[in-house]
Image (cartoon, rainbow, N blue to C red):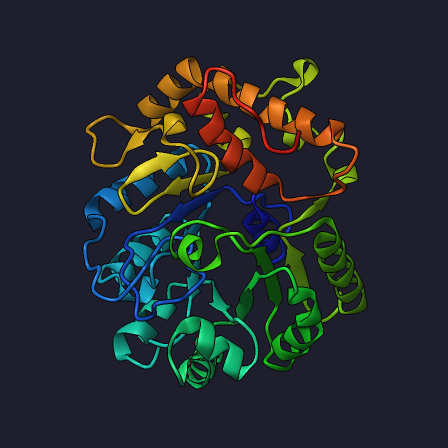
Amino acid sequence: MSSDKECLTETLPQGRVSKIIQIHPSLNCNLFCKHCYSSSAPGLKDGLHVDILKKLTTDAKELGYNVISMSGGEPFLYRHLYELLSHTETLGYFNSVTSNAMLLQSLSAKKTMRHINLIAVSIDGEEEQHDNIRGLKGAYKKMLEGVAVIKGHIEKFGFIHTVMPDSWKLFPWLTSFAINYGATLLHLHPLEITGRAHQNYYGTSFSAEDLYKIYIAHYYLKSLHEKEIFIQLDLLHKDNIVNNPHFIFHESSLPDMSAQGFSSIFKELIIDEKGDILPIAHGCSKYFKLGNITEAESLQSMVERFMETKFEKIRELYSTTYDAIVNNTNQEIVNWSEQVINNSHQFANSAEPVFVGA
């Protein structure tokens, strides 16, 4: 259900379905952003062991995964980034990285970019707004210097923006900005009230009117500029969800329940900064985790156990979220992933959960 799959579909070879391993190897970052969903910060240098990640990505390839999506923290502070991405490139993965683009001048960063197919650069607005949210004067100018480096080393890149309730006002500028710099995509992702964002934006919510304005502004700009740039918004109209088999496992069309069929059901597998393997999205309840990358058990074995013990539970989670959205007559614009994540915690912590969307 992740928007990353839709964005990457625009860049992968025609007909290739994105099945993503999203890796958060470290929380180490050169910035202290106000809206960070993971509380990344300078000095958090502990990172996942690269040999274990190499084995994990090798195993995942056998299960059908074909995209690596590096996040963080700032991925270019992960000291094994080159080693990991050169390995996944040899396996045939499409390598993508989300970055603040401020650390790309070094020879090691340029060397690493030889093994990257796509970089998504985070952008918060015009210079003053960007620097304010990033907590560093000059961050905007440094980001633009990084974009210039990217354009000299990678054919395709994009921008990613954290959407606030009034961000629809900024969308025309963001679109023109991205087009003028030659980006192939603009990814609009609503604010997640987790990590440091929970401290700085607690109480911030999207009203129905906010969601309508965001959705309409996106739809207009996407239609207007469809030949110039792909614009992806992580919100859906309810009509895109009703009776859509991607959002509920119908009895009449149950998926392949084997380990080989796992990547067709869960097209995004998350490795968080602690090495936990999650099948829904970053931030979902650890109740649904498959295991941890440090365990001796193989990924296929973890998948097989998960399908035996947790699949019916996750099917119930999805189905209940779906029903709550469909039956809510006051809700038309939906953040599906957010509601599934929130409901995963309700599901795990309560015998009689109250599901978001109802």
